[in-house]
Length: 472
Image (tube, rainbow, N blue to C red; front, side):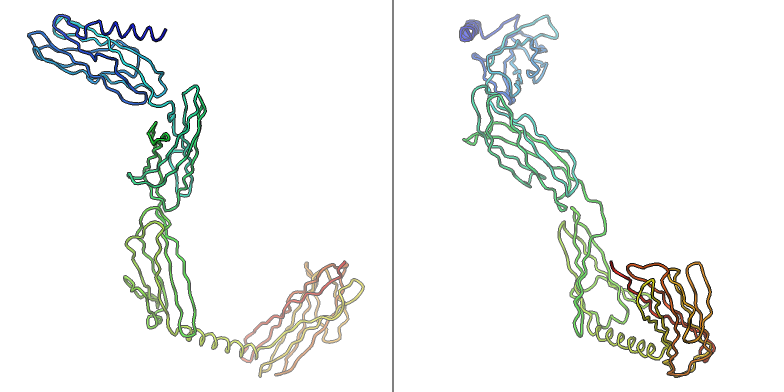
């Protein structure tokens, strides 16, 4: 039945004159139906001739409801006996069914009551039964460090055959290839398949607009369908570039290296400085000379200017300080020696204990005061404090202290008129826990206060002591 209709249309088309003459207007159409392909821009050229002896302006229109048939131009002026070309643009969607179609073209004079019409036949052919429906992206704008997911959707409109194709996905920046994905896809009849590829956007990936081009080809490398999409990578805001400093100390010198890395995705100018004591300028030996330097507040500041550092690029500034370790070691030795000598001749207060930590037993606490200096200590006061968890037993083998009960426990105070050089005094007292203690009992530091020969009062402390309790 389809063949009969097609043959009838062809015979009717051939028998009819290819020249329509309506009061001086001729419309000349192709003698045979023109093949137009789905998914492509097709053009059919029709000749319009003005057989009249006057110049005329013609208006063109088509009688079709098909949205993919349009005129390249809608009117034109033609001189007497002149000929013009009318171009018809036909863009059948990729999924349009194959078959013969027609539309009517009407030519009408603007200045005179002259009109002519003609039917134009064309044959729709599918370039391929498989095509790209769309390209899905997880979003349109990305920050460095995120992942772009590209999902091309392929459709097979053939109702009988399975199609095997090759899909190529290209990511382009300014027409330069950034990354490419190649996939082999098999699509069943009247089905769709979705490909998925991930593009990791690094911190150093340049910002800007990118283009995605997806194309599918058959086994003979023939292009079947192609689509494009776009996405954007945002620029990392300006910030202080990360720096890493490494110092290697030697006996007579030290090596320092400062590494700066551009972790942005655009080139950046960087400026950094180091500050050293002014005395170090005599020992400072840089591998690359500083851009500038200045002295301020007994310090010298060295500045380096790096005009441009590309994304992901690093630069290392190295310098050496010679003989500085000798100065440092000497200074440390002097300070340590002074401290040791000073500590050796200072009065000492040591806190000790004897006994077991038990509710049924008492513990003897002893405070050892030793005058290690060569001078007499006057108006010596020793204070200690017993937490409320323990009870002070009022049995004293040495000097009897004054006792004060305070909210947190008991305060003991001993008054000693003086202690001669190298002399040691021992003060004792006894305590007893008021409850059974599991774990430890911590007793605070004791205080020693004395008057120097110049009438100044000084103070020193003992260490805390920890008494172990019973362990279940």
